[in-house]
Image (cartoon, rainbow, N blue to C red; front, top):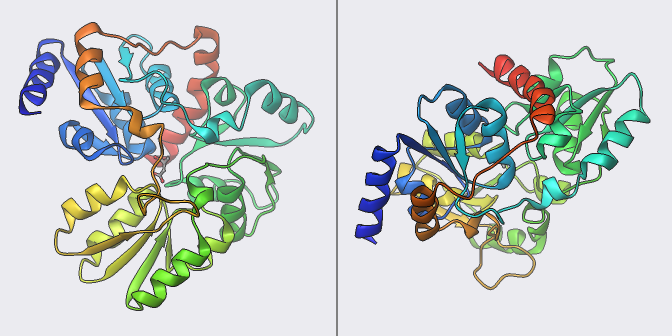
Length: 308
Ligand code: CIZ
């Protein structure tokens, strides 16, 4: 493993590459990344890097976002099969038809979408900035929000809006078990429940803190003396534990669990071996149709401008 890490770092230097890693990646990938963060932070780093090659250790839509922002750079992903169930729940042709059927609506899309969906979007949001961006519109603005119905419902409730929601969901966040979280709370009555807004409302009702990965991490870092039950993809526990080594973090289990935690199988497709191969071969490479990229960059840039 040490040889592999050394070889990756050498290749990275030789090729002037940068490695960006999402919080849901395996721990060893997070450890070797130049920057680890949520989709917003990854897009912000991609937008400002001077590297020639961006290796996006995350899922496909994250690579697409980097490519749209940096069309002249090479964007690589260690495994091209690292997709996203939420992005898949929103096919671009169907979403475009839905938008067409609702003239006069502003289209707000979650970052977990393909570039083709972003191309028919007015502004992109992440879970870190969704509330802020939705609130930047007048109260009576007619808004389509896609694709995550749970995040949409949550944002509707905290902003007192009635956005029209696309019926999509993340298969990982939908899976958390209310019964098992209730059992964990009984076992650890002093634990604080942290939950991601992609979880179902029945899970969010059990939560003490609802927020994006960055927000949940920040809460834990600010209160390291507490104990936590964490209802989001369990990769985030790596960074939580790194930042708060003395704190107890308990992953919330899904309904059907063999490992006791909830992992995204797509995120876990990326490995150190694949990262090495992809840097060595400069492949697989993300490509985005230039016409789609030209349209998709506007709502992404609008999000970055609002979030700056
Ligand atoms: O926005 C992201 O990176 C995701 C998928 C979750 C989060 O809240 O960070």
